[in-house]
Image 1 (cartoon, rainbow, N blue to C red):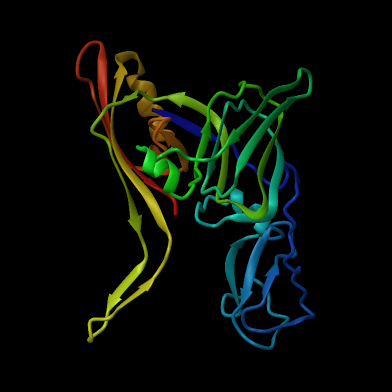
Image 2 (image 1 turned 30 degrees about the horizontal axis):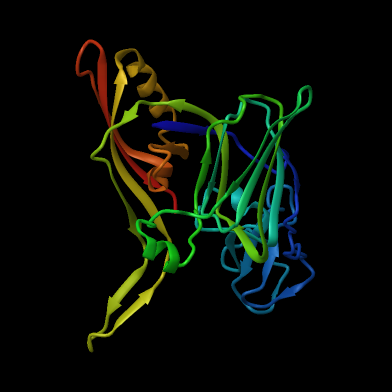
Length: 298
């Protein structure tokens, strides 16, 4: 299993993006109706969207929670807001370039809707050191000729790359393409990966569903679809010399979301979130065993 320790991708490090910020900037002199959306007008809020909670909403500061509701990041910045279900969308293509100061060798692209992904790493001294394109057609579930010919084409919704050259001070360009369709991505996470141990068979994966399902007095069911998050339980085996380092790393990221990649051939074992609990058993002089319970972000 690997952990990807994320770097912050902010407005300052975002070199370019072809996703427009179409939300109107808030103006104190404008009258807003209930449901109107605006973008913040200060350096701290310029990439944040607020929703008016009243009609005839004039001159009320965005900090007035009786008049304004914080709705989240702008479309351009949803892919960096640590909310996997909130997607950045754009027709045909999303192309972003961001700069790094620390070393980066991994990128996780989560909750994708695209046909292909291209990742380019450009170093100021060595030039382009990485340029790879990945098709997102999934072969999962294709187990016989019938499913090969008749099952609808599915695309991967998550892609994790851990083979980038570990340069610092680069510019990384990620291009998601699907001509003629709406391209979407829930989260882009970049950082430096670290081995935690070998995940053993017997792992369990699933989801926590926050949808509302209610049955009325006549037995009819009302379903309100809401977000969900991944969850998983793993057992890791590691060399004894890694024990203290693993405890130190997990303790450091106890309140910081990170990407955990248990098995590259199972996208369902990629979790972006926190550990709920972990314990390390020093099982012998040469190895230790770690029990790790993870819960993903919505």
